Structure formats: structure tokens, C-alpha cells
Image (cartoon, rainbow, N blue to C red):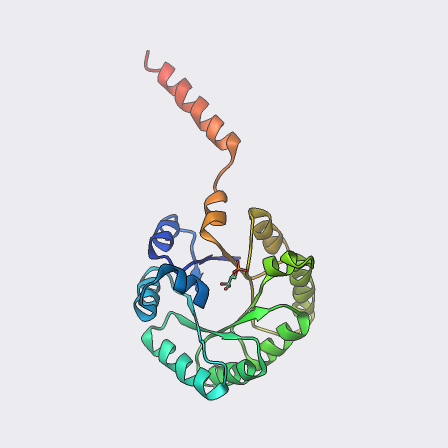
Amino acid sequence: MKLFLDSANIDQVKEIASWGVLDGVTTNPSLVAKEGKDFKETVLALCKLVPCVSAQVTATEFDDMVKQGEEYASWHKHVVVKVPMTTEGLKAIHYFTQHGIKTNTTLVFSVPQAILAAKAGATMISPFIGRLDDIGEDGMGLIAEIMEVWHHQQFTTEVLVASTRHPRHIVDAAALGAHICTIPYEVFKKLPQHPLTDSGLKKFLQDWEKTKK
Ligand code: E4P
């Protein structure tokens, strides 16, 4: 499973990329607004750090989505155009696919949406599991259903588990065979941690010191 960082913060991306485990970055308009930096400069800086950077179109009509997405794609070969799961978005995904531009369908909340995005040719789809959990639905249940459908179909579209909230989401996504998981910085920082690793290392180092006496 590929691991992406869900962030538009360059320092955060640099830090996690330095661990040698980062396959890509997802941004969205909210994450970009939080950083208050120029969008194109941000995307280009991210593209230097990782091979896959999702940049979301803010247009809602087909023609404007295509114009915006083509511009983003022209910035760097690592750009993946993020398109919302609407009927205009499906048309745009189909267009981008036919023109060799990679896409990430965002705001996927149901299996029918996932199927339509795959049929339109999306490179990846982003089901938002945390936001489903937030309204009392079963986000990971949606991933299980989508992976079951994918098991029986010929879709090449990668399933990118988005809106993750805690390390268990990453474990469950991997166990279900999801292709990618995008993870917020705070959650990513929790992944390498375990109290037994800390206490175990402390003991090893204390014992090693004793060999010097
Ligand atoms: C995915 O690409 C989105 O940027 C993200 O995962 C949304 O997560 P949120 O529900 O925490 O905003």
C-alpha cells in the first residue's frame, strides 16, 4: 500500500519524506488555504519532494474544470488533477483520461460513486472515511464494500483511503487491500511510535554503557 501525506505544508512533507516512506501528497482547497501560500508555488515545491501530488480544481462546470486541470497538469508531471465527484466532474475525468492526464476523484462517499468514477477512467478515487464516521456511518465499511467490488471487476482505478483520523484506519485500509492511504501529519507522526520500542531502546543503551566500565 502506498502512503500519502494529506497536507500542503512543505516542512511537514519534507520531514515525512525524509523517513523514506512517502509515496505522494494530497492537497485540497482547505489545506492550501490553511498555509496561506501561492498555490502553484506550493504544488511545484511538493512535486520536487514526492512523485504524486493531488491538486484540486475549484471549478464546478466541465469546461472550466478542464481548463484548470490542464493548466495544473502542465506545471509538472507529478501533478494528479483532483476532481470532485459530480456529474460535471465525471465528464472532466473522462476527458482528462482520454488526454493522458491523471486524476483523483475526491469526495467519494458511496459505492455507486466509486463505480462511476472508475468507469469514467479515474486514476484513483478518494472515499472519505472519517467524514462518514463523523455522521455515524461506517467509513471503513465503505472501503470493504469497494474492495469487494474491485475484486470482481476489472477496474484499474486505485482506491485511496482518505479522511483518515487515527493509526487503526491505516491498518484496516491495508488489511482490506486498499492501494493508497492518505494520512494527516499528526496521525503520520504517531505511526512509528510504540512505548515498548522506547523503553526497549533505553534499556539496550543503558546495558551498553555498562560494557564500557
Ligand atoms: C483527501 O484527499 C482529503 O484531502 C482529506 O483526506 C480530507 O480529510 P478531512 O475529512 O480530514 O478533511
